Structures are given as structure tokens and as C-alpha cells.
Length: 76
Image 1 (cartoon, one colour):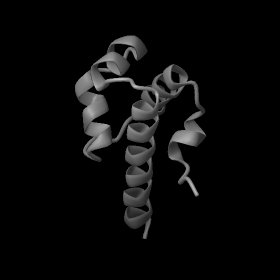
Image 2 (cartoon, helix red, strand yellow):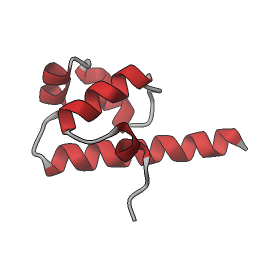
Image 3 (cartoon, one colour):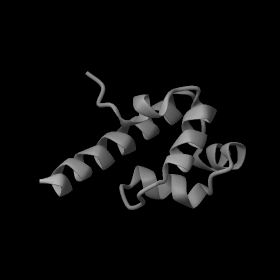
Image 4 (tube, one colour):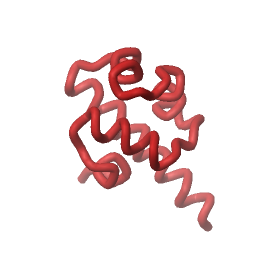
């Protein structure tokens, strides 16, 4: 059961990160450089390959000026 929920959470994170980044016109490389998160990790998160730590999510959220909760919550 938890694996299914975890997979859904990865999809939500991936979708939200990509949408927020694109809305703000920010390339993966820029997000990585300016947030202190490796660009390849940003790419892996968007492709649902990586499982980022709370520290990484916090850095990304701070750079995008959203909360970690917003990154992890499905938009209606």
C-alpha cells in the first residue's frame, strides 16, 4: 500500500517541480546552480528517478519561493 502512495507522491513532486520551474522560466541548470542542488538531481526528480531528502526539497522550495508542502501537494 505505501509503495503505491509513494509512487503517487513522486508523480506529484515531479509534476509540481517541472510546472513551477517552467512557469518561472527557470532552466534546470539555473535552478541547480542557484539553489545549491545538482542539476542532474533536479532532472532525476522531474523524471521520478530520485528520492530527494527534505534538505534538498527545502533548498528547491526556497529558491522557487514556495513551501515544501506546495511541492508535495497535488494541485486541483
